[in-house]
Amino acid sequence: MKNRLYIFMMFSIALTSQIYANEFKVGFAELPITPDLIDEWEDINNNAQFDPDIDKWIDVNGNNQFDAVWMAGFQNKRAAQRVKDDLMVTTAVIDDGHTRIGIISADTIGLMRKFVLSVREDVPSEWGLDYIMVHSTHNHEGPDTQGLWGPSFLKSGVDDAYMEQLKRDFISTLKMAIDNLEPAEMSLALIPTNPLTPIKDKRKPIVIDDDIRAILFNRPDGSIIGSLVNFGIHVELAWDKNLELTADVAGYLRRGISEGIYYNDQLIRDGLGGTTLWLTGNIGGLMTSGPTDPIYDPVLKKMLTKPSHAKARAYGYGLANSVIEAFHTGDFKQSPKPSITVHSTEIELGIENFMLSLGSLLGVIDTDPKFSLMPPFIRYLSEVAFIQLGDATITGVPGELYPEIAVGGIENPIGADYLIAPQEVPHLRSQFPDKLNLMVNLANDSIGYIIPKSEWDKDAPWIYGENEETYGEAVSLGPNTALIVHENLIKLIEESKIKKEEK
Image 1 (cartoon, rainbow, N blue to C red):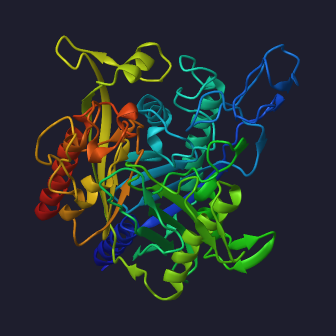
Image 2: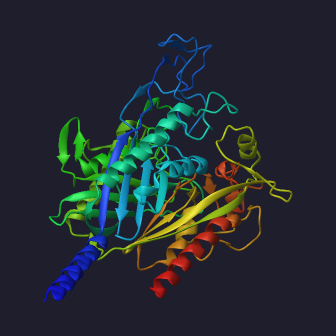
């Protein structure tokens, strides 16, 4: 009898342990990552560029040099003057009982893979993280974290001390998110873009991947723990004359979903609660709302055209309102018993862009270039990833993907440098029709634009009868980048399908 009781107790303990081990959990955390502003300056000629021979400045710390936070994304010499709102790092840790992943999203222009690897290396192994994705929102209203936007073209704008603090903050949020892990349920929604928040494609062919893809994590009582929101637009609506640090569109979306939509401290609509993590979607091309593109603000009841914080607020809150509305109308569908699988691979890319090669060799861009005796002579190691998360997938793209690679519509226009059929086929979204796929640009790296080879246009005549070179190639590694990224993502997707069938 005692033996039977002992066996029964051991069986019960084992069963309980198994149930607990397989329990799906999530944890969220966030911290401000706004750099400190030291010296003050006045933009005398109103060109949003610091010129010590023209502009006035105050040496606050008395060190006889101008201590700047160089802002990224537009022209050189753009030194921050004030803080509009905090830049944030938001982190989610997701654990299905077998696999644990961390997703870090930061309000930065981009983070090179060298930095990403250093973050991973410093994470203690006992935290049990099987994979860490580090993502940049591509914020054009924050500090230079790549080196391209300093006081001159050949002088980096990166503050090494800030980058070290950034790494510590990333790791701190990982630990906080792990400590916050709790049982969760997961639901998904594909949310059509509201006409009030249109995206413009600034380069032909006009192909826009414009839906919102959202994942909500809730407690058994229905309260929201956190959310992942994936949407493709450049985070830059304050534009190039702005000298105030701000999280721009991404910040308004996060605050709107989590805390509610506020205008001048007046609550317009309740939020959903929890912590919201922004993931930038496919933005190559260039997907944006430009300096003359109108946005209607339904609260102010007027059209906003000029770049401003008000325009960023209207757009970000508009996206937030779409997610909140989808929740209240029951558009989120539960993903039962979600499990996690991760597939990632290192890829080798050629740096065929002379200026980017020069920047890498001179150390302006924080990379580890590799040398080859065969062209391309300068090569670079990057990474692509594919994560299955229940009925959702997360595709990690190391740069800014032209949407036609994701949804189709690649062309070979007259004037293109290569007379070839589309190479990056089939389009990526066709590979997972039964899944809600979050395609995350600037994941684990920031290699610039990923342009279909048949649309590559470095030399005249220009495509689509344009009178001058179209934007894109100047900030791309080269014409073969897209093909390599596409080929390896297709391989990862196929690998994940095989593994699923084996299970």
